Length: 392
Image 1: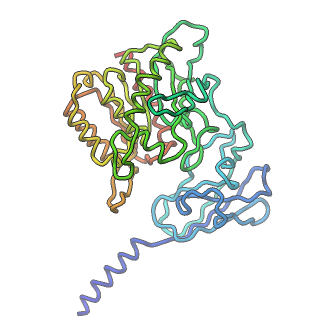
Image 2 (image 1 turned 90 degrees about the vertical axis):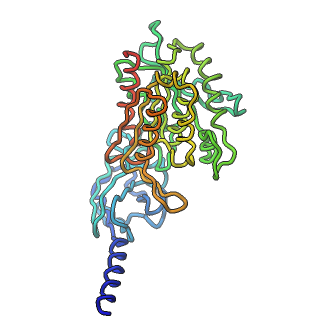
Image 3 (image 1 turned 120 degrees about the vertical axis):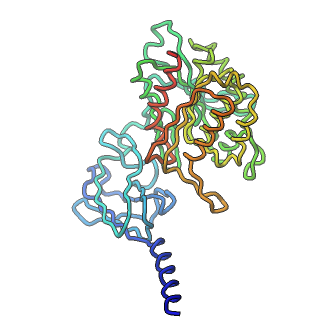
């Protein structure tokens, strides 16, 4: 009996230990002079990234120092940011740029000391390169009967030359070039695509399409197949708009190289999923696809089914796919099961190689998570690989 009691005691203790919660104390030791008298907040997964949550207000310790106590923090990765009440007042680097969330690995009760170099709203709102302009503030999408903003990046020297360029089409246009238009789940953070092009040896024209401002509306436009959450979706119409309306407009208005091997697409998350479908459904149009953290797990098995039933395999064989995923992109499904982004990507890559055999490069970033910061880090490699297609 004693052994049985001991056995259950060990089980209970192990369960409690596995769910152990800790206290994290965060101290700010250095602040910029600006806004020194304003309230400072900390936000993170612990409050669902609410930037002005009064429950997480920092307390002044005098002499420009602040502190806050966060309780019931589980072991593992702890991410957080400082604001003065909303996403427009985020902390920033000394030169006014936003970066990834701060992070720490929590194993026990922890004290963290931080320095805030500057506040984002003390710098110009726009971070876009001078090479970025709006094609239209209300470009008509006849296939969807809606109007959207569309941005274009033209390489330096475009106006002074007669050179023709490849074209890269990108989704989530608000996040591609400019912090001023970005409004991500963890606050504004652009991909920095314009900075990559400004520094590139062989830049291209980039066309960025604004997504639906409503989260559910965006997902409906990036899904090809209906599912339990979204029985009515518009991904087919969205891709048809790009191929039949937008691309002809771009090729007529700008000096482009309109052929397959110089027409590319890239996107992340649901934008990565619709990019993959663009390649599969329009293999005569798109020669290079940057498929970044595609939300395959949300597609209810349709992605692999689509790949298994490909018809235009000959055209797909001459395509080029760059797949990217983070090794820490885990998602908990509604049924409680856990899925891993890199596992889904590997399955899709294996299936695509087996069925059609296009040129594929796969990168699994060891510490990568799901978000714009990681796609921003990955994009230079994605673009370098896409631009190499022209040389092949």
